[in-house]
View (tube, rainbow, N blue to C red):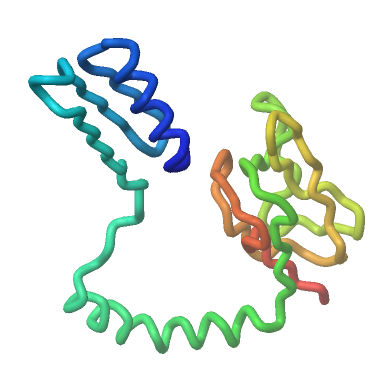
Length: 161
């Protein structure tokens, strides 16, 4: 809602004679209170609702947590460099099975060929088969079943040899 819409809403409420109007939408709330023209001027209260954000770690804890993890991260990167990462082509919900009563498409250790379906990603009520672009062996599954995934998020590590 832009400022012109808010101003026209204020004028409408003032003309209608209502003493208070509350409007709540996903990202903001507006309360307009009016009184008689001689006794009380119109009042507009605009409150912005903060969006949900990830919790922020204290600054003192961050360096302590990163120092021991740095050598382990380097070792993991050098280990994983020989593997091919299969990433999500879309945003949605990741599913390892075609349906709840069926077995998973692939497991760690499964040998895959180019074109094999690895998982399904649900986006806007559509289930999209995610096919392998490489042949090899699944080394690691990086996402839990029924988890939300982002575009370009790593899903699988594949050993091409």
